[in-house]
Amino acid sequence: MKALETEGRYVGDLPLKEIPSSFWSLKGIHFESSAAENDTEHYCHIVLRTADVLALFPGERQEVIVERVGDLLVLNEQTKNRPRSLRGRPPYPWDSFHLEIAAAIQRDELPAKKEAAIQHFQSWFERELGLRPSRAAVGEKLTPYYEKFVRRGRQKTG
Image (cartoon, rainbow, N blue to C red):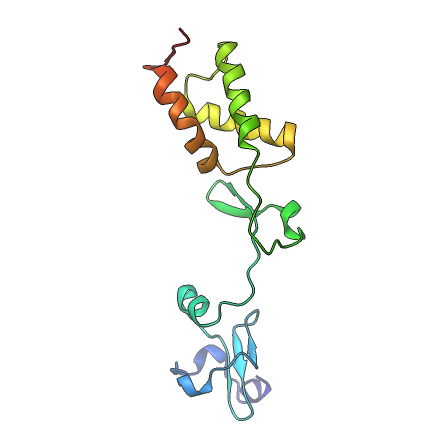
């Protein structure tokens, strides 16, 4: 970089170059700064397709929960430092969930719209059990109830 500055040039002025496959190893890759180096070569402003990088350098995985805020995905900070399970995530207590749905049906309080029910039961999980299952997981469990008890926006309890 200093050599470029001395010559009055900018790194963006350098020609694009394909990096030979013989260059690549995990040692010397600086993912944060998009650079890589070995004993004789240095590349910067490296642009790669994410799928290609993950296929070749999968690295250590950690499950995290992200939340959608508008058109952005935001990391849920509560899960950032959660200890990693070696056997996968333990199952949610779906039995309690099904009992809560049955109670809502009995009280005639099952929301007419499935999307509203998904939000309601996600909040219930969080409030009662301190868990936040995905929208898809809750929706999948609610489907049979909506197929059986909710027709044309009306709840059938009898």
